[in-house]
Image (tube, rainbow, N blue to C red):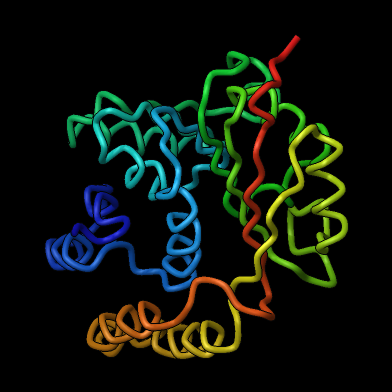
Length: 247
């Protein structure tokens, strides 16, 4: 099985050694890998042929989702340079089923209603000025019976460029108000995951050590659960009613 995010090796600027390492082990970012395990554990239970990746960032979720040529994947992000990189890499990989566009919530509103079976919103909802409005727009983009898979941090204060501090009750209410069925809200980044992330952060300033240790960290996270009784972040899986269309 190909490593998560190994397509990112084709981003310009890597040395040959870095390119080879990422191709072998995937994207070198342990928190991203922990989130990805949880997100794809939910996505892989769904039968979907069209995915909207909102706040696509470096594109690693879109790359992984588009490995299935029967899926149509659309990546949207506000960062024009990242979107151009996604386009270049998708052309390099021959991924005609992966497209990308630069834009914000107004671009999101311009996408066709009922155009996607799944929406991915990973570490992005806190950046929208009006998350309720954004969730209503994402709800409209889903086909009846479609699913949104989101991941957000749970903190006590805003980080730079964030607009909303979420908690479980606020998440539940936002998704219900947007028209979704009652969401599943699962805890991620429990004690074991946080310990591994601290080890990763300590190694990050020591590139040679990180290169040696990173495969062991990946093995360690593979042995930990995706969700916990208590965790610092939330995975939200919410469904649009199968009998509901958009007017």
